[in-house]
Image (cartoon, rainbow, N blue to C red; front, side):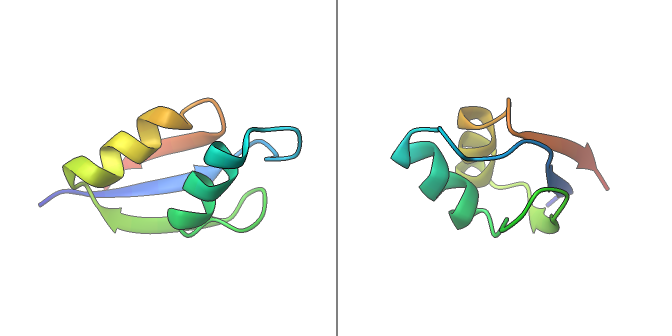
Length: 59
């Protein structure tokens, strides 16, 4: 599987509880924090829901 690098670029303050939990479930804690994960359909769906808060790069 492909790996992707996800970086949080915007704050989760004033976002819905669902978006906050999705960002935390991706492993992101602060702005500019980065995680590398497998590009599974579940992860890609989570990224799609919060794409306005994160930046995604293929590795």
